[in-house]
Image (cartoon, rainbow, N blue to C red; front, top):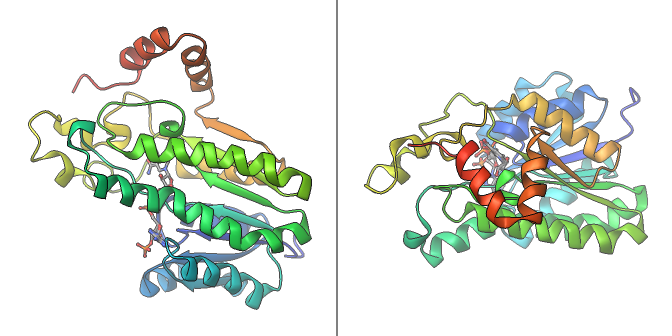
Length: 272
Ligand SMILES: NC(=O)c1ccc[n+]([C@@H]2O[C@H](COP(=O)([O-])OP(=O)(O)OC[C@H]3O[C@@H](n4cnc5c(N)ncnc54)[C@H](OP(=O)(O)O)[C@@H]3O)[C@@H](O)[C@H]2O)c1
């Protein structure tokens, strides 16, 4: 795939996992659009990528229909087609559900679910032409609960349901819809970004600010997750869990919720 015929749009592609996904698709021969709200961050991300003449940026907020439409239109106006949409925008949370406000839950659903819905709906006509794919970025929190992740689990479970529903509806139209569910991902600011969420709550341990709420699951390299996103689009994989062994834990929890809860608490939660 060196003729650069294919085009991917990565929402949230200006930093974190999204930027690594953009790089992975670029290296695989795609032309790439990255979408984010901050234009200087987008410019810096574009400059950090090799082959940046094959990269376009869309400065927009994809929680709004207008922003989602702009992201898709950027792909069409720059590259005249769209083959893959990666819905990577998402926000996590820390805290106990008893302290979760409706405003915070709304915000988590806007960031994790509305973004994927709005971008996908805007992309469908173009993906249908190419027989393309949508990859939504879920989380282990799309599959199971976890201590101290607040409303994130509810929002990512909603995204998982939306993904399967879209896959069933869009399959006859030739569009694949997949979900990639990574565990905690290694990053430079791990541990600091959620500190303010946990420091005022005596019932939440400081370790909850760490990736995955302080879970004992080892952090994944973002490149591993990005490679899975590429496989999900190319091989039309419906649902991927990283690390793979955790699919067993998820399956056990479906068959026996009591045993699933026990295993989750024993093997994935920090004693914090
Ligand atoms: N980090 C982990 O350990 C982990 C684990 C499992 C799953 N995930 C999932 O992976 C995805 C990426 O996570 P991350 O931690 O890499 O994210 P991140 O570092 O917070 O990056 C978020 C990106 O999205 C952009 N963005 C945020 N809100 C936006 C909006 N409304 N419209 C357009 N762009 C927006 C940001 O740029 P601007 O701020 O400039 O808009 C930034 O480029 C999320 O869906 C997350 O739930 C993460």
